[in-house]
Image (cartoon, rainbow, N blue to C red):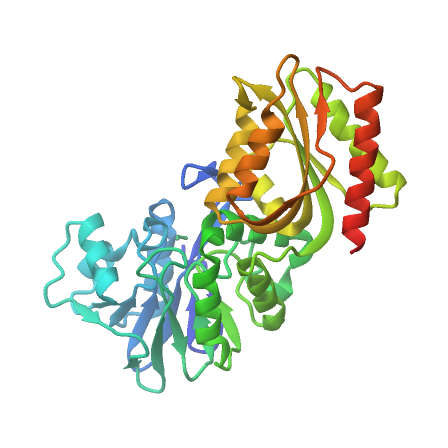
Amino acid sequence: MHCTTRITDTVVWVGGSDRRLALFENLFPVPRGVAYNAYLIMDEKTALVDTVDASITGQFMDNVTHTLEGRPLDYLVVNHMEPDHCANIEALMLRFPNLKVVGNVKTLALIGQFYDMELKGRTLTVSEGEELSLGSRTLRFYFAPMVHWPEVMMTYDTREKILFSADAFGSFGALGGNLFNDEVDFDRDWLADARRYYGNIVGKYGPQVQAALKKVGGLEIRMICPLHGPVWRSSISYLLEKYNRWSLYQPEERAVAVMYGSMYGNTENAAQILAAELAQRGVKNTAVYDVSGTHVSYLIGEVFRCSHLVLAAPTYNNGIYPAMLNLLHDMKALNLQNRTVGIIENGSWMPVSGARMRAVLEEMKDMSVLEPVVTLKSSVKEDSLGRLKALADALTQSLTV
Ligand code: FEO
């Protein structure tokens, strides 16, 4: 049975949610599920903006068929050719023999790479800024290459002032009836997952996000319709500010995230002592994570949020403890920049993890390492306790600058 939400008189959300999926991209935990949004525009011509993942094809097809009320589907705009949004192109082409698939040159090439469908005579290739009339409105196409795939484009409804933004402005998390941002407590229930989605999926492409923001920045935008998560019909400037900050690699908060790896609890002990010392100096809202027990995607969300990081890790195989190495590798791969970092290393006979962590940080942009680096030889003793206190002083001072 159909389950749709009307966005305006003539635009209908025809997507759905998947709460059974454990790992998005077979990589990222989604305990709150994930929504796949698609939008059907009913004008003199009908146009569907993107499709959905194969996991909810049945729901999606019911939604589209019900909304069309027997009318044919004239256009399918493909803003993004990743399979979580384009799994139903062929099924729609078979059901609607006059349907034209709208995309750019790169979109159409990717369709050929992923699928074996006959596209001859069934496509409409658009270029940057080109418009497509649906009758009472036109759709205008803005390319957003590498946000986060090369073919990505955004579609602007010039009458309704709606920006269909592809993955940009999306979030992990299934939708529960409340489709719009002003129907949920976004800061409480969605912001962390929106940040985690941004950091892990789009985070590497800050300059490209900046370019896209500039491109659509001059538009009058009444609503932003992303491919995942809530639809934005208010507080648009709040959302744009978050994206501007994240894509400039500016932290959202002056706060400390302590991330430690610990084999037998001794490095953990140092991390806890440091966090307690920070609290004694008046530092609030310090976040502490065990990198072995926290999926790295959550840690990435936190490094995008916090201005200050503390990385604490044992030496392992003459290098960095693997779970910490994995985090550092992700931070570097995602182009994270502009953070202040404290380092705690541990090593029972030859501690080198501190130097190794510093070396990775030096390969990143604008990462400054605080002194002192704290060295533990197996466990915290009086000398290392003094250095932990000195690091707490340095962090506290740096936070107030
Ligand atoms: Fe939601 Fe890039 O796919």
